[in-house]
Image (cartoon, rainbow, N blue to C red; front, top):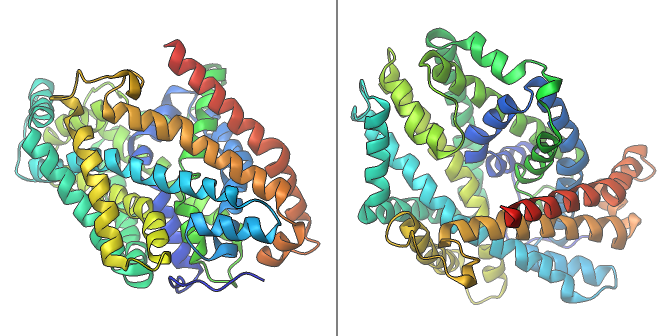
Length: 457
């Protein structure tokens, strides 16, 4: 029998769905997924991506939620509990440790980029991009990256926003993100979608994202789909395991996780149909990453009717997406500190938030003062790039792989049946087969090839 939790439980299944979707929906959904879809065959890529979600993302997410709900504690202690229950070594708690550390490392550099989005809410709202050219937009972004005070200030504001929510606890803080911020994000997406339809090149955007171009889908594109299917659901970083610990015992894990996967994909697709009509109507090249978000789009919004209002709304949307993801990054560590009995929610947040803030300062300065600081112990990378590499390409894939191996091969089937209320259900056997034989192989392929490409480059 699963043990009782000490942190609280979500009010209902939908609170978990919205909270987990908030964890999954982040900056990558807003710019990365729409762009890689358009570049890799549109509708053909979406189909491959959905297949990868079904074979990698959802099976491992179900396993991670199951571990969290079974243990009802932080990822570290949940892994220790389920390992003991299975008669295994407590060393399996290392999976939880790796997830907790990965979350804190990600928060350190994620908060820097989220700080840029907060800065742009005010820049756009005050008319900095009204009638702006590409050169003006590049100048504004370059000025931000060279301003240490601004970078550290916005990084600090975002960390305080994140810590403030998590301090309030599971029902008042994290659930607020689910019940308030996520519906607000959906409303903003719909408003921006309407604006894209009215003022942008909606047909051009639809062709870019959904034309079924099999010839444009290479093996590299398939690899990209596999990688994004894993990373988009926040797997391997402890967040989903921690959120699973707060999941009501009567909620169906499989149905709930599928709902999260559908919502996450839907948000990414709608975000693309918000962004690219504006991009194409302005004759701007749909570049990837910060170039699109912080240089191209401000020019587009600044030269369109009503663009300043909707541009400001867009950067508020980006900030909310980042915020809802960030609170899930620090929660696993906070839960563990509370479980030691030496910290309450306030002190635990201050310790971990302060640690992420300190590490994040080096990430904020990676674009100017520390741009040439690429020591061997950081693999010849700046602090920002090193933490990005360490978490995305090493810690998260390993975390997901070990979760799949533990649940698939080491956990008793009777425990799964009990936790999922699925005794004798054929879907349990299908999920278990995928988790054992398909998901780990695909994660290893992504892990190895990505590392090879990284070091070959």
